[in-house]
Image 1: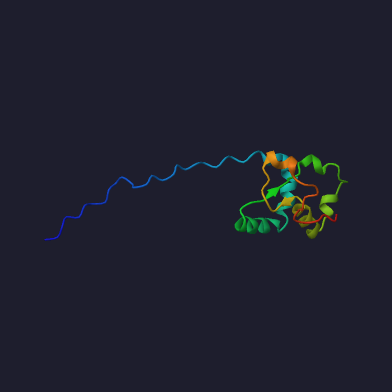
Image 2: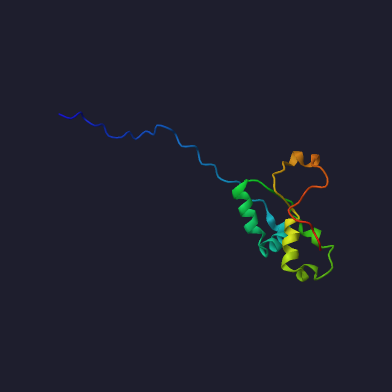
Length: 116
């Protein structure tokens, strides 16, 4: 005679961690020009690759007002390479906490040198 087999328990042995909803993104409207330039480059692929390798980076996104000092048509006249450089110039390959921002050495090695 075989021993009786108990059915599996409905109570889990380990409780699953509670699902935390991601924080809603902040209003990106103030960065729309930088985002538009970024989307027109291949840098997003580089960013995804970097995040897969190290899971950290810092992007200094320019606010729309930063572009207002440029001559009319300057952004439209940039080549693909220049747009890539512009975006890469604002990327660090490591994460910077806001409270550590003031202690960064100057100059900071950016992803690209700006030659515009």
